[in-house]
Length: 294
Image (cartoon, rainbow, N blue to C red; front, top):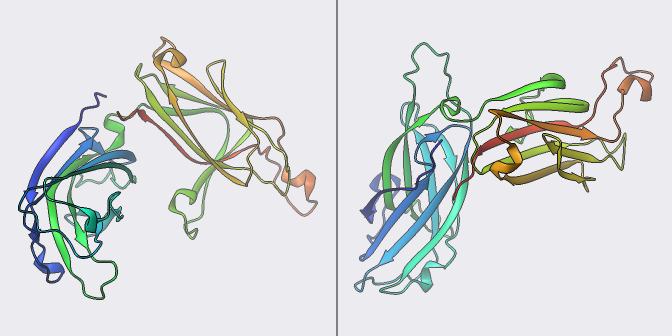
């Protein structure tokens, strides 16, 4: 997949009347650049914010927060929310200044490709603006609004095959963290076969170990036969992020990502009341592999 930054057209600041009253700030424009150029679900997207303040900018007397919302246009559901304070507080913005910073947000998997009515993409609306977090009034100043298409990740994401050493998928929809509602246990050694993009890529693993069973369990990651990382998690849950160079993945059309542990356990051998005879190694909640953002 080709990564490219694209700039969504900037809109002059205007009041979003449906969300309350507000005063229109003069001399403030927002440019929003998003990469990659094709948005999909199950994607980390980079958001580059550039606020341009002209000489007639009158300034702010309060520190506004920035709201960033991705709306599903059909169902009117909010898909993503990334409200935040700008890196330079708005009371410090001055005429002629340019305020720039970047943030990364995650678009979860939400598209149903087997739905008979699915058209190959879904249109979402991105809205960005300012709001006063200290005010009880629902006052918002809209700075940006744009409809964009979101495609299924399968269109561009490298295929990941859970090849060997994996137990069955388990789920618990009641868990608070949506990324932890689905998981798979490895055995002592598990392998994924991943399509090789032959480009610098990002690998993210979120997992867990059962410290009540094995306090000092080591986790080992390998790309093909080369060691990527090894560690003993400090807590039961862990997250690791790696940037993989093309040379690490090799020249073949696919490569092997191996998850190992120095110690595995069988619940039934530790607890006489357990009937679970599986070999359990590492609990994997989230595995992400995409071309790296620039």
